[in-house]
Length: 78
Image 1: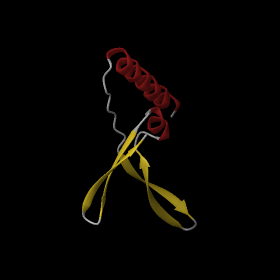
Image 2: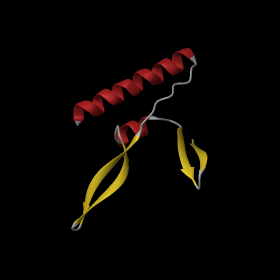
Image 3: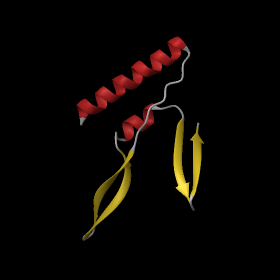
């Protein structure tokens, strides 16, 4: 787990440097996946970021895409 976090952190740092140096926008994606968690006697599925929380915290702005009642929505978190 430590190696993955270091590699992701290093990648985020390189992307930030490129964005700052060249004045470009960098878009990164952290897909959601299902994780099974034990709650008492039951296994419960929850949605978690596939690349972990550290990758989610590396971003400065987030764009969350989701469906509700058959409509697509986008939520921009600054």
